[in-house]
Image (cartoon, rainbow, N blue to C red):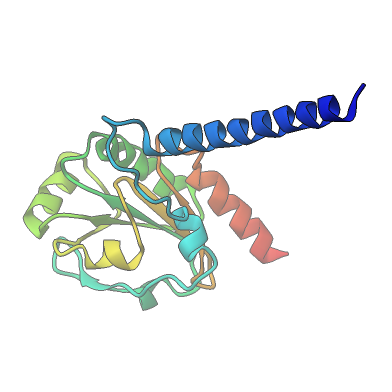
Length: 189
C-alpha cells in the first residue's frame, strides 16, 4: 500500500468518527429535551430520604382536630410515624383505613398530619373512624418542614428523633409495622 492511500484511509476514518460523535451529541440533546413538542425538562432532585434522612425530625407544635395541643416533646423516646394525608386524596383514605390496625400492632406512635383546615380534617377522621391523633396543617407549615412533596407520605422517626425513612404507602415498599419492629430491635441491642 502506498503512503497516500494509507493517509487517505486514516483521514476517512477520522471523519467517520467525528461525524459519529456529532450525531451522538445531537441524539443526546434531542433525547434530553424530549423532542420539539415535549414539556420542558424538570431538573432532578434528590429523593426525600436523601434530603432529610438521618437528620433530626422537625418540631411539631400544633393543635389537633379536637383542640388538644400536640408538641414534639410528647413523642420523646418513642418510635413514630408521621403520616401526611389530605381529605381529597383517594390513596390517603385507603392508608387511613389501615392506620388503626397499624397503631395497635406497631410498637410506636402514629400521628396523622392532615393538609387541610381543621373542620375538613375532623370530618375526614370521623368518617374513617381514625383513632390516632390528627393534626390539621392548613398552611402546610408542617408538610414543608418535613419536605413532603405529596400525600400520602409516611415519615418514620426513631427513638432519638431522627428521620429514618420516607415512603408513599401504596406505592413504595413501605411496611411501617416492619420498620417499627426493625427499629425497636436495633435500638434494644
